[in-house]
Amino acid sequence: MTTQTVPVDHELMAAAAHVARTRCQGDNHTMAAAARARDGRIITAVNAYHFTGGPCAELVLIGTAAAQGVYELDTIVAVGDRNRGVVPPCGRCRQVLLDYFPALNVIVGEDDRIRTVRITALLPESYVWADHQLDDE
Image (cartoon, rainbow, N blue to C red; front, side, top):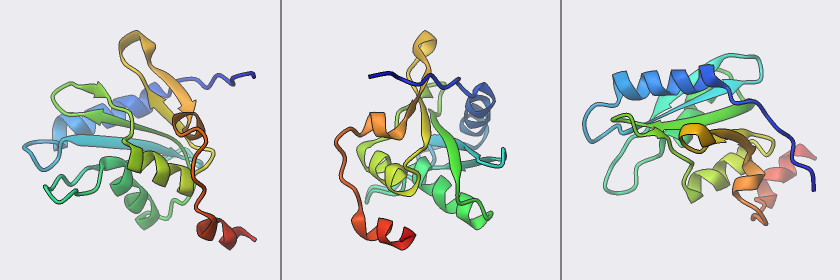
């Protein structure tokens, strides 16, 4: 099996880190996400932490992108506040990202092991939301 190497989008990482540093203050917003749209635009968002399970930054980003007319994302990254660096998506986000963007690239890893992988690599043998896919027929 061959693995396609996708370059790490450092500009995207910097955008997420900037939002984490400047907008994630306090307990309500602790993560930032940035995604590159297929047309090159960068969309950013922060999580909305709540003890009932508020949405992660990646999920807020999907809505933010749609509100800006962006429905195709190429790459996404999440960064934690307090200089925590890149944080991989949780299981729920992995499934939602796969359902919405099956060809999405995700930046993961830490320090010198930062890399870009397909969302399918983060959720192998995954469930396919068939009802959602029927719209494409």
